[in-house]
Length: 84
Image 1 (tube, rainbow, N blue to C red):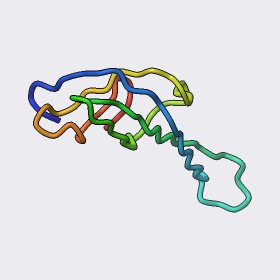
Image 2 (image 1 turned 180 degrees about the vertical axis):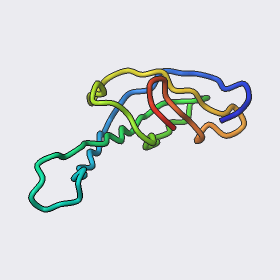
Image 3 (image 1 turned 90 degrees about the horizontal axis):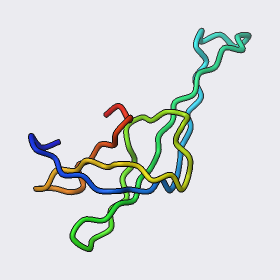
Image 4 (image 1 turned 30 degrees about the horizontal axis):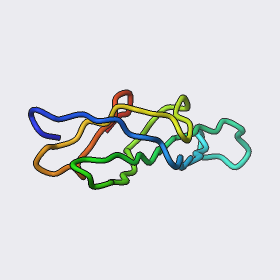
């Protein structure tokens, strides 16, 4: 992301969930979930859709989030509360 990112409102439109067995054993019930929200946002009249690297379970489809984008390339983003 740019040294001075811009921000706009985005909307979570899809959430992909990956499941991983922590112990890598078929008999283990310890499974973790990793959330990958996709956000839609608009910059200068153009709409973008971007899968964010990783989010928390607090993200729900339709939730409005803050999206930080590179003013030189608005397709490069991260969202508040999302590791990227």
